[in-house]
Length: 429
Image (cartoon, rainbow, N blue to C red; front, side, top):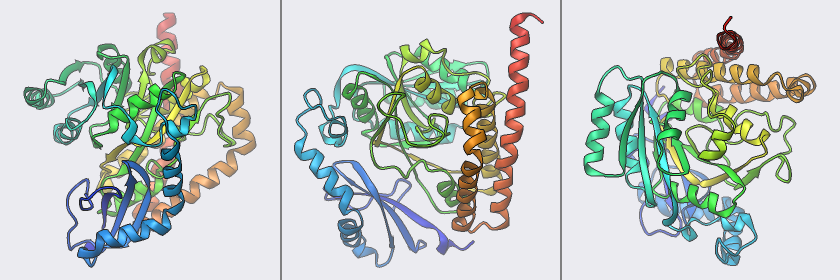
């Protein structure tokens, strides 16, 4: 693949005076195309795709394209902003959460940010640098070092803590992302606990938006946000971006079992519809009430993934509400090479299979799979083929599809085996 296929990723604030910022650096001549997230008042409206050259007119061209391509979301945002009369007084939830410039940067009971990491100190450094720019107070940044093989993560956190007293270190000796997440919940200082991954870069207003999501609706148990691709330099990154729809929804939404039901035929079981584990926050007491994260799921556990899907579903089934706010923005660094991406998509498929195996005891899910599973599978197949085309990976892309499908089948089998073993252990058999 040539360098000319690379897409530069940028972010542009319509109401700002600055240039277009790139989450991973400035635009370079090696790029021919740009994908620019356009925001107003820090609220994402959508993407603009333009040629990079001539670079000196990039801002004016993006601004002009936004005025037409994003005219409708721009109008909606301005209408909601015009009628906003404060979080405490407005009865319109969508208006209350539409515009981050109205969100307080301090107050409330505070927010704990938890990063669960394992032997990835360099990625963690980048993640921490972004989080230390957060505008919200009071906040703590708690790093959970999960079953480390060295002191590198601890030393990285200690160095960050020396410059920022909000940063803290804790260690979970048992491997597994669910165990690390549960450890973070237990050791977090505040009732609202936000999670992100060590391969993300959070927007400075991320924590403020999450806190505002809970303030806008006391019934909200979980707030999720937008996870945008931070780099599209390689075919592998473009494959991931096309395959997983983490950064494509720009309208705030709510989900529950009563008045906020999604029209999907698989609601509420459809994987990924509520958000992803790289960007969410929960009320700690509500998550504790449903038993925390399942240690049989998640990276490092028998399921290899799926703990976020499982948590979101259990929140909904327990009568809770999830609020999705696109202004809660983090940038994600996708795997850049085929071997790393193959391992990741296999794990994602494995986690999905484990998630489905766990919840097949639900008669509702079994009925939905029997009645609507084939059309759903066709839809996933279409997205996979589209990802292969857009990434230009060809045979490598087709192998990625096979890896994910294989992971689903193996994940379902492994979860059932692990659950049976855990049950026998508890019963003393």
